[in-house]
Image (cartoon, rainbow, N blue to C red; front, side):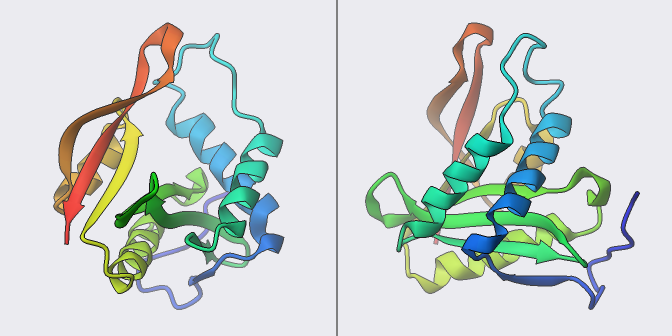
Length: 172
């Protein structure tokens, strides 16, 4: 079922995530990854497990340098996480921007991105970084339209199939 969500929809609320949101956030992450990355990972690749994703989110939320936000339309339908990039104190990190597939194309990802960028800019980082699957052209296109530039860094995600992340940078 597609929820009627639009960029100007006042029923959509973006708010800081709390520990009680972790299970719903993990469900959003899992649904988005399974649908959005199905063409990227080979069928034999292990599927993400909701419990593992929830544990990663719990870890994120206890880090004092990390902020997470959720989008709600009657229920949590999107999420994003911000923080520090790999212990580089002047470099912010944008991560885990996921939206429930049933509401893709409704502006939720854009609103979450904008909230995350405001949060990162308020912390006075010099630079922002993010990693995204090399084959995730939809996300890469969105970041490039917003001024992010590809670096020469890669992160191996699933070695047997050569699936990797590329790293982007945004100078502030």
